[in-house]
Image (tube, rainbow, N blue to C red; front, side):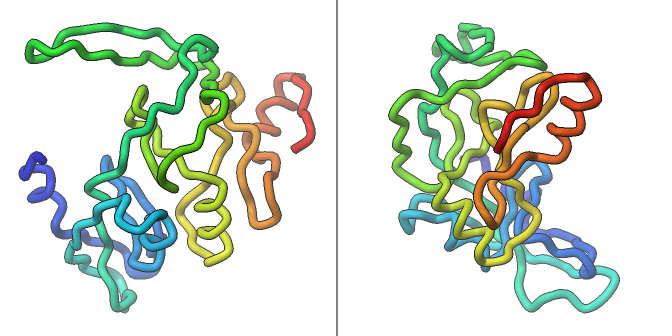
Length: 189
């Protein structure tokens, strides 16, 4: 673990009028309400406490938690995804990186069964993924600041098409708007 990363984030200054359950400022932060919903099974994530200073009003009586460890899970089918694989050597070790084309399509592996509810794509670690069970639990709990979008259309030309809402999978308004503006078909949710 790089301790300098933790030392730069032990303190947060947040507007007390707006305190989402999830936000990312290069690293993900969650509320104490959200953490147990994401941590399925318990202990699959690691979170470190921060001290949150609430500005511009009286904030809640909690501080954000920094998600310091999120498991990496191989999830992408690289043969069917529209990505460029770049093999490199870093510190004498082979490293594989993905270059996701701006309008590329990501395809999940067939039969994917992740071992935990929240994880990062091992092939593309900046991508944070959640199972449907986690998404449903978070939405039912009324947490906000987090949007569950369909992985396979996130990086397409017109953006994410589907997202999980309180009543199941819904069409994402931005994806629908972009498709209509560009005279592209809009499939059902």
